[in-house]
Image (tube, rainbow, N blue to C red; front, side, top):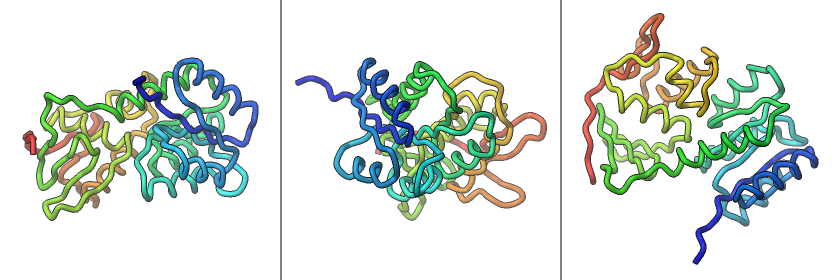
Length: 238
């Protein structure tokens, strides 16, 4: 039996972009679905398995931000948002709503392909010889399910970006991580970091961990240097 191709849903009201991305991504081995608006997107999600969504911000009817919020209410499928060129506000808002990455128009199909590949690799990151759980403070991170489990057993779903950032901190406990390092991991590419984008990613993770307030205790800000996870980390198989 042949291995199932990863399925990509491209949501954009521009037919030319949909056709271009469908042709390119299909050629490199993905199964590609398309939608021109939110209603078509929901129809595709209801009838097919989707491994990643490419979601344009500017859509007729519900915009990409609204659709991203709706998706995150019940799913942690990786989302790449397509934003207006040089508009940092769109990028920050998208990340705050749970998007995993963003790409400014105009963009090359090859760059999108690289982002898709990186996000799918991150989402599917499991190794059978590694422990399933990472324990820290009062939390347990389920590596397979991409969930945070509290002491009471409450499960908190993480987006791909949340999961990648938390794994980065857990791999370097009590070490200062600069913004360049955090940017590379959460955005999946080398570039000059946008301080605001990095801060939003950290803030969102703090919210998941209940570590908000004026003086966070778990993920600490090291002024002029970056961020630090102040915790002892342990591992468990069950």
